Image (cartoon, rainbow, N blue to C red; front, top):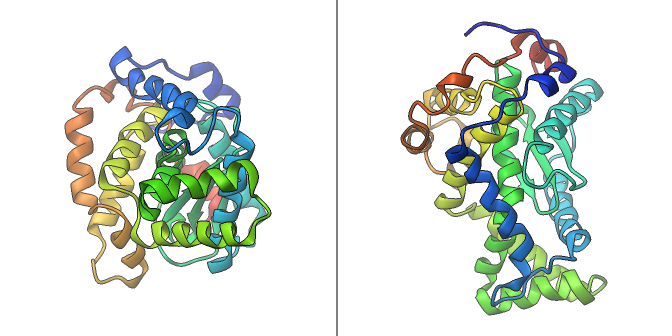
Length: 283
């Protein structure tokens, strides 16, 4: 691929508009966001963005209890800049998005409700460009856009119980320790077993669209999946990733079928390898 030096301002000017069929993948997410609280479980209302973030904050605290943020200010600032730029091209640009690098050698990335997104130092070490980072962050942004994690907690607790639990926390019982404990139990269960395969495949499809809209080579995410596929399944740093996500080869196959040649016209958009190496180095 041709290397193109490009600032954030340059990306803003050059950000492409995708064909309508790919754009619709993100457009439909807005209805899900606006109508989420109108389903049978009544989990979260349209006025509850702050409450969604409260849930996500507790979830993020659980992650940070397992692995702290990496003590590298330049890398943290860089990942936030890339993530915030991508979030502006999602269907929920106004969330108070926060991005961070966890100080863990494990290979993984996580998101929580309300806009907290994390990538591990171990995964950064296996990336080669900003386009690859953008692909991974865009995948996690898509999970937040679609509220996959709130759905997963509801399913983990049982449709009725989970709906009541999240509603209690989000609307009236934020100070109730019993509710908090039960909520975190559902959160930990989702962290251990991961999201549904369908959610992961959807986030992959949406992720390449968000990355392309933001002006990046959309093949960054497939490149990361190829790297993971080439790694040994016996590598201990991959154990959680493999336990909570479909196999990389299955994700690549599904993404290839969905994308076809639709995004080939955007493959010459920036990869930004030099800027990635300068900002992240070798974690």
